Length: 542
Image (cartoon, rainbow, N blue to C red; front, side, top):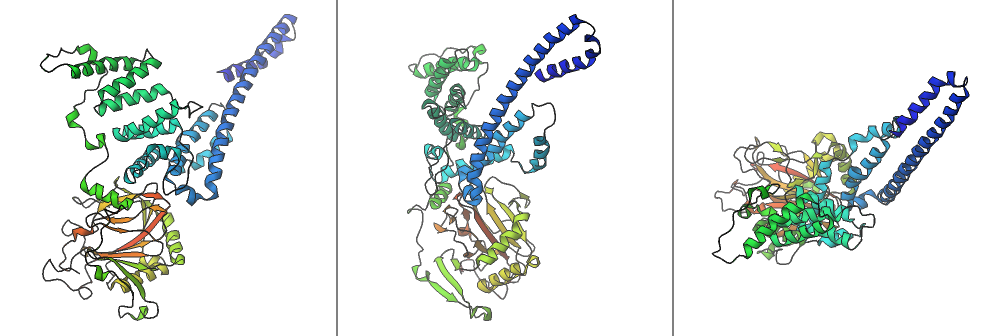
């Protein structure tokens, strides 16, 4: 508005200067006009300086964060909190910079230049996903909320502490996902930081946190605590409309709960219900009260943590051996396979040094421009679709794409003894912030899902070391494979009878620190008639 006033005054000079010199009275008016223009100009400069100071402060903060990140991007992004903060900077800080600059009437070079990078900006969905990943890591690895907020995650290096506002936003991410368990944890952490004055810039109001907490505790069935937080809210803002309405509602239910049995409850005034959400406590979903506690989930997460009671020893210890194997294959006489059997059923084999650093680098380079969000096959419809339980990006490399891809497929055939003509293309996968793949089968349970037979076997290559997390686990049997660069894990998904082996149900644990790269080849039944003998009965094992 001030800019428009200034421009109007400038326009006044242009339109009036041909007349004012003929009259001293008019010139006197010009003096006063100039004085008004200087006031307007002074205010404009003041506002511009304030804006520049704000932009400079944001720039210094962004520069500090970027300087740390650009020194070693892979190391920086290996920490889950840093990934969340990077996405957060684009959603909040960079948007704030753009909004401040957009206040200028003329188009600025900044806005023109920044537009060419817009396609690469994270979206709100990315912030939601990064927040969900942090909560997933918190559950899987039993991470304390305060430790995460302080930047102290066991198994990783220290990261910058989160502000009260950032804790509040993580709580809101959980709240919007109807995850009141995690929302409560993070709102309480935000509240503690505000009360400890860990947030000198006051990036979030205490009243806003209390407003959320009162409803979260109500949804968790803790009416007393909900009332307590509402009273704290009203102590700060006595005119808070929703707080006053909720206070009456909470007080009514608390008093009702304290009434001796047999007393008649008073009828509730319908007018007092306005603005309240009725909740049937008996119909709450499990995720509203806490993390998924199914037996498989517990076994899966315990294996991811490497807890002693969860990791089982093989029943048949005699087969737990390491061998140099050539499998009567001429290509392996000079450089045999380094085979280690680590579990009896399903029989899990680890092939050490199956890929070298040059091959890994080449496969990554081929896959990088082809990465897309990974999909899963719907077991009912057979269609490919996205799922929250598989968070990663994948690319598929054809055999004829590069000689190294051909060489890798040949090596898989040599090591497994299986025919790869009907095998799927080499799939390369990179897991992002808290990337994981929850328990699943590689083989199809739907009849005739593949024209070349079911997936008889899996070869899984580890193409990076992972400092923390990222193990491959088999919850039904208690087996666990840690990712080690250059190794490959191999197992049969089907019995010799062709029946699916349900003990091969496995999962990729969330990556706590590091960047996890894997690749795999799924081998199908057709073409294996003379490579792997069929069993006469389903009980024939390996």
